[in-house]
Length: 184
Image (cartoon, rainbow, N blue to C red; front, side, top):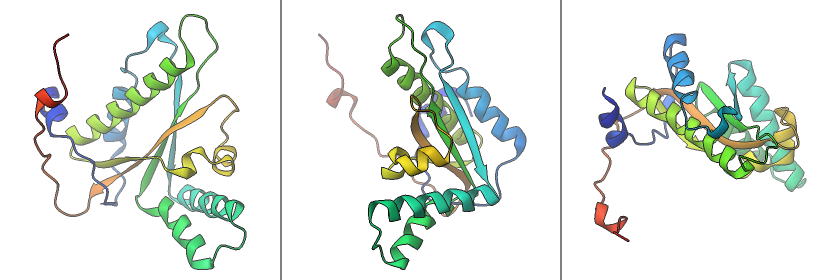
């Protein structure tokens, strides 16, 4: 798939299944991430591959975070929180590790990490891999951040849920460019 086609046809694939994409496909996704715009070539990102038994550990973190917010949470609600980590055979945690520099604000470094994350989504789409970007309260939760080993200055930008598309693919709805673009 050429780049323009990938950009114009990418949609989120919220339901994915196994198996995990091939190592070659995953390496292409990570290589695409490393080409994101990056003022100062700081490479202010890192990525955690969460698969296999690590998915159960992520599920435990989600359950612990839910219980930290509400110790009286019903067991079925704890299981629902845990289940959010188990919706795909691979979760990629995208982490901004902004460095303190006067030339490049931390916000710009966070945006570079978001661009790197988007590049992974595009590379997944171009290879026929299903992927969706999710955040939600667990991405910002202290229990999850600490459990994943994030430093105090790091931010979890996204959880990418990655696998084989489960079900029919959506066709993106056309949008009117004129609704978003004006001359100044």
